[in-house]
Image (cartoon, rainbow, N blue to C red; front, side, top):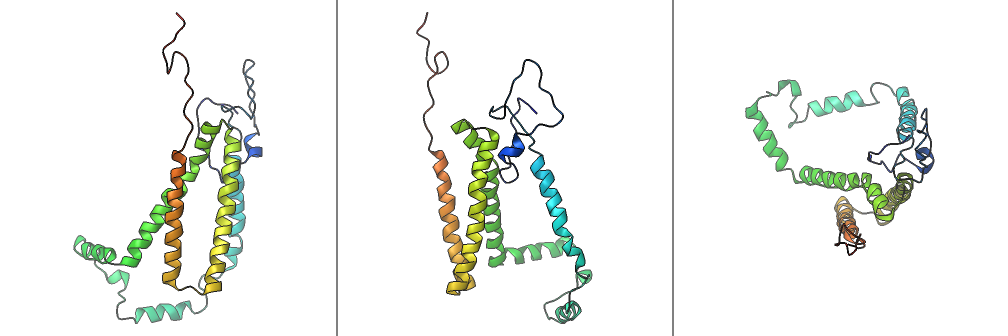
Amino acid sequence: MTTKKKRPVDNLKNNQRMCSFTFFFQQPKDVKLTPDDNSWVGAWWLGYFLGGILALIATIPLLGFPRYLPNTRALQAEKKLAKDSVPDDEKPHTLKEFLPSLKSIFKNKVFLFLTISVTAESFETAGATFIPKYIESQFNLSSSDASLYIGGIVVPGAVIGMLLGGYLIRRFKWTCKECITFATIFSITSGLALFVFLIHCPNQDINTIQSPSTNR
């Protein structure tokens, strides 16, 4: 499969082998592209297809759970007896009640800062989708190689980070405040590390493009 149009690369679902596959496509006689060419787009959809199948398989064990878990009814009854609990069907859904509720949410510091944290993390994670394209253009790599290198860094880093974080919490018995402080420090550190992508090599001067031609 070939195309002149660049596409977004998902580094977590593509790999070098998938991007070198071709399906039901024959190149024109005057075109001889290979998987090493930057214009080559292999079976980029194959990762999504396999990921969808695995996700469906993972849902099969969930079908074995009952509709309500044990003690669910008791917990629901206990919540109804709480003084600050108001059944949803008794709440007036009007603009007059919306504004005080919105004000209450903004005054909830825990909820507010957790939302900001998740939003910032989403922006940082979303950048991983475009990093392979940046690496591809900076180092003249194919789409599959760039995705493979970035995926080889992101996936093990996420796994090691989660396992190490769980170990540290259990080993030092951190409180919720200590966990948040630790996460904040490392989030800021990793965010500052993104500025390393501003470092780049100067472009080569090409005659008649960046500089005047001397050949008259």
